[in-house]
Length: 566
Image 1 (cartoon, rainbow, N blue to C red):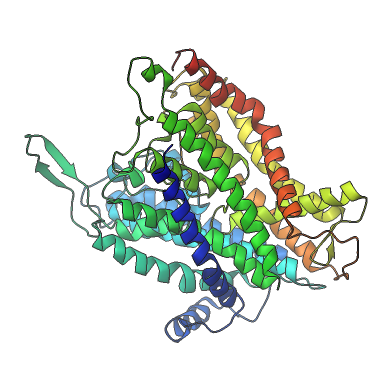
Image 2: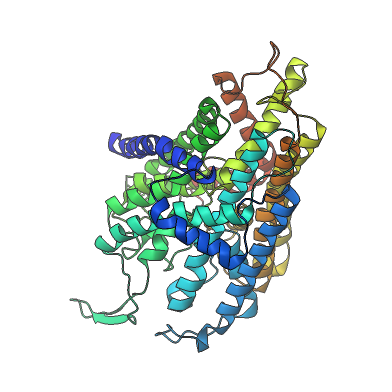
């Protein structure tokens, strides 16, 4: 490790810290219905959308109605994308004349982008028409992120409100998030990406001859507009197969920094928005601090593992860090940082090949997702996932001191704990059970390119990533009907089987009366609480996933030290 490598991470985090408060304050105003500086431009369009769609913005919903609206919108979004992918051959903006997607792959892809996962069992530049990229994938990048943030806002309202049954209006939250937050930022940063060299055109791919005489195909298309929202919305699906390792998607070290800032910005800002909405910013900073500690811990391990390099290569007399699978423009430190950032959230974009990381370096992205994407997390999903763990932490703290647990003036009782546990159990169950099945059935082993513990890691990573709605991969695992169906189902439950219990938890909290603080009330913004919250998150992940991780990356690490590889 070097000072320059650590300096990159520190500068990155300081910028995130600087934008957290203003962005969080702005989002609190947007979802509180307050006037913002964009209102003169956006408000007329917002009203027009409500009028055309028959939405009454002053009409609120119970958690049941909010959840049903979310599910209905997601179902229609899925069906729309599925039809588009199955018919793209006959539609315009297809200069490469790509064929329609197969039914199982189209189903997997439609589920993937509907759930904000963006898992890709295909190569974008050789499978997707420009219309599918823009009207299908990029559009889903906006609305799937907006759905996640809307759910998070509804959960926060459940924490804030007392003795009511409503959590806001899903359609209003969805619209405001898209118009006031996602779209303006995407326009501004998208123009920067275009100015830095990211393509934004409708040209057919161009074939050129290099100075050495080799023929090369240059990919074009509406790339910058999709790149910005894939990072901002923590979606991650790349226009091209190389994702953010491609110079077309990520042309410079500066664009690399900008893309990482986009990935973390909304997750960080939502923590301050939470503090503003509960009228105690210390609560938001406590959650932010827990996330920051877990982030730096993960980066330190990943950077150390990659900087230390491969002992098998060292035995050949070659020293240095592990550059296998790295984009030379970024190197070890920036690759380790990007991998940590993208798996702390539900983004899944990559600027290097995770399958080529050292075993412990690859373990970090795996563990990041196994912690429930709570380290800043996905657009919205990180915040409501963290609130689930906050409720569990408060409950455990109450048991430790023998008092009725309370959180922000509300008693946490068996009903709230049941909802929280239900949400927390989704990740381990839907990661480990499919992994066990795939590791023993012929269909699960048929497209595996590596054997031994590394092959097992590829399977484990696939189901961890799809369940966590992340979308990154150990790309040695190839697609087939078995994986298209099973990972698609995993993505669906990974999104909705967490969101619905979180909304139910919010509904239960909103209906409670507020109780006055007493001498026995546990402070939920102190360093002790932050440490306890981190402990609960780590223990739930470690105890559940440690045996599986031991069979994969940990065993592989020990075997690499003995000179064995897979």
